[in-house]
Length: 279
Image (cartoon, rainbow, N blue to C red):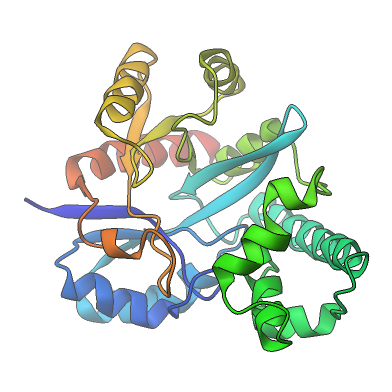
């Protein structure tokens, strides 16, 4: 059976393995099609293109985009868009600014706890990419405030620790529009128990194309519930390991949690048709 993993992160966002190494890892695990879905950027996809072609792995354009959904964060997976389309370039630039502002806000909150961090230290950890909480955690470790990423998140960086986290992301409507304008498809990421039935209905009404049914956080019952919802609304179904590498929780699922490539071919048929309409 041909296998695909459509949810993978690299060092271009909060992953611990560079894009080139991810491609070799995918080859080692017998994957045929993958999508690198770094948070709010296409840098990982761009860096992996040449090596993917060299080893014969089909690499889809992808990104996991953070959106504002009714005042809270919502993660939307974007696939098969034109990464050079003006709407994507504008979206990525705005997301970079939003993440930088959020990083500064978190640093200010941590200073109230007596933790002295500088945004330049965090930017260095991000290595030119979008700033995320794992990069702040790395600085906390480097400075001896915590001993591990797990401790950093439990003590300082979880949603519970930070409270009402600063958020200046695009609305889910704007993200959906931008990706579709670029000929791509938009999919609800790891819905699990994050959304009520009404929330999912709202996202469908807003124009999402699909939903991620296969994910490490989904047990069998959750997976079946999501599949039923997708079939009811004629949505694309996607899945993947949410691989980050390092000591991240889901690292062991790389090459294990996969989907049949028939799901990918349906996704590609939709986006190919969308690109023809957009011309």
